[in-house]
Length: 362
Image (cartoon, rainbow, N blue to C red; front, side):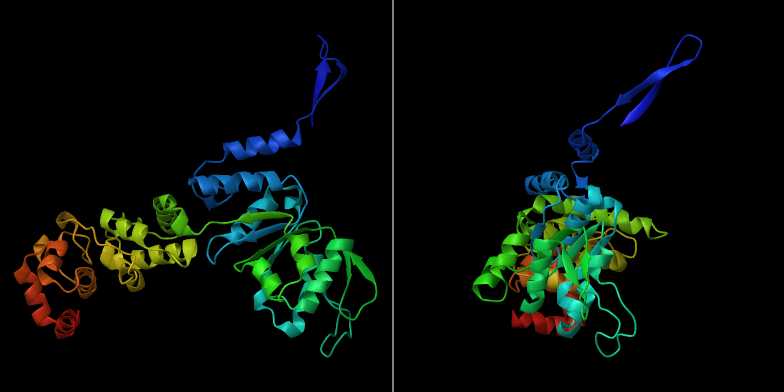
């Protein structure tokens, strides 16, 4: 709501006009002003990610529990944070909890707090995460790892909006948005007896599934560019460019660690490139040796540790190993991939006995 005074010709006060803006329209405007390539710090222009952005916008208008599923490294906490910050709960705290990282013996005390004398060492009363999230959002990550006994207490809170601290009898009322997440299939956990079915339905009111990076590979160049800019802001040096050959490998790789693994790979490559262009040889070895990666590097962009063409005869063990692996040990084909003459590759192998042994084993 905005208020505007009404004045007469002599600037005398006559009244006021009140203008009201529908909250839904306000959120919609906020969403539309975000770049389609990123929303609340989440990067993606793939259709699946655009759908996620719209889901975030939709659920932010309500206080219902949200359950986010997806593989490790897909950005579940980022999505939870986005839901929190653009909702009415954004005025309060965002309290993340990794349920799998809390020892079973103290998980209830961590979540619900305890009173003085509740157990040995409880010398004072302590607030738990639920109470700290009052007025904000509580993010229960890896919720499938919670003990069944603790699941009962969370279920009761979702039903009644209140809980007792460990060792206490007084009911503590809390208003908080519950957002849960896991990289496991909760339905399978229910069938296996590891997760309560009634709690599953209480948490899964609004499900959001985050696709793995291998299912939205069109976002990889965008993410790489973002991570390079991000690193440049944290360094006195200009971020290096990335060669087409290196990008091809990043697009081929299946990314079991998803966006988190991609970010780590870019940081690793930046360190190895020493400010030069990132080429395939600067990428982590586990990526280069993966069976899903195909070598498509043209002679004009051979794999080197310097970012320059291998036509100058510059070779390194990592690039040669990759070329030999991808060509099944065929030295002639490997030389063509590397952009050097066969004699140059043979001389390199002759000077590197371990590499020669590796080639002979292929």
